[in-house]
Image 1 (tube, rainbow, N blue to C red):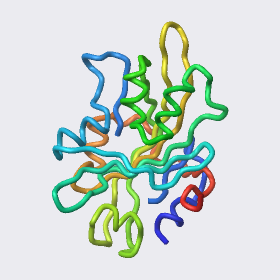
Image 2: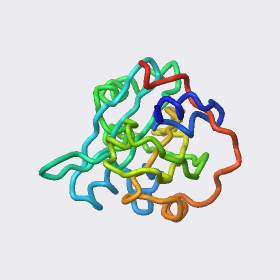
Image 3: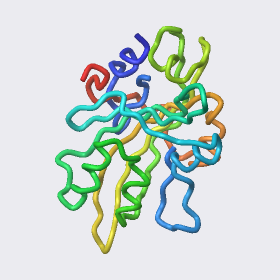
Image 4: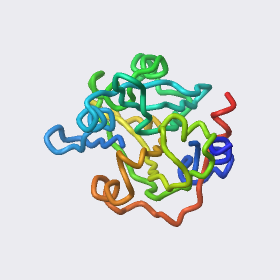
Length: 202
């Protein structure tokens, strides 16, 4: 199965990147890129989060838009939280585990959110029966844009490493060129991929 294949593929890009199958964050409110949730809302007119898989230290989320007839996955996000979770973010972390959007939840709790890009590239989607093809309502075969990054937060002199995230994007939402335009080209695209266990089996 495509999602399980990706999640097993490896575990070495500062977290995981060829998996199952944006979130732009910086410190300055006036110049920061949109959060992925904001971008989806702006682009498609709606936004929601569905937890697809969850377990100790891992969360797989469907970031979707919705019309009258169906939900469409715009980004599949696989998150590995830094363990143990720092006590200073315990409260907001609990709300995130309950289904809250990571970027907006942290920011609404008063944290400045920082993102360090670690990968931009593409992965093939070839199985029409895969969970990702079903969530995105796309035909196969096709390539999907994917990127990964580390998330940290800061406030009043405190700095906390929070999570590593891989995001796989719907072809009508973001492609590789758009990811590079948003996040730049500093990621090492030749680095081998890393996955944290098998979150789809949790």
